[in-house]
Image 1 (tube, rainbow, N blue to C red):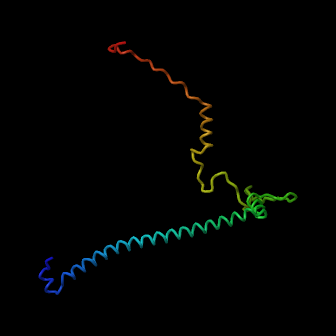
Image 2: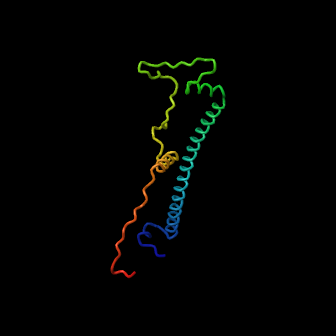
Image 3: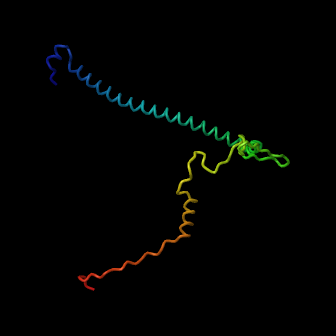
Length: 154
């Protein structure tokens, strides 16, 4: 290996050049490994955060399930949401001047809570469509009259 003149004037030896090259290769390889390691640590932190959120949601749902297993809670919900009364009690509904019940309790609506209508491909929509189609069958196809081609052999 030939060392250039400017390297000799700076006092750089072949060993020093080789050492710098080896160190540069090591730094590049460790830098890519460090980047991969940091990416994995970030992904693991995101996964741990997602797991924590999911575990909190599961705990909330288990708590809600435990409440629904309590008969007193079910009775209270039936009274509040549906306006049910126990036999022997008298239920009252306060009606406003417009003839509609005054606020209180929860109304059960036939539409979905998010305001969307059922999908057109829902089973009941397809069933209703098939009943309609059965009531009005399509007319049989008409046969078209064909004119024989005089050039074609029979």
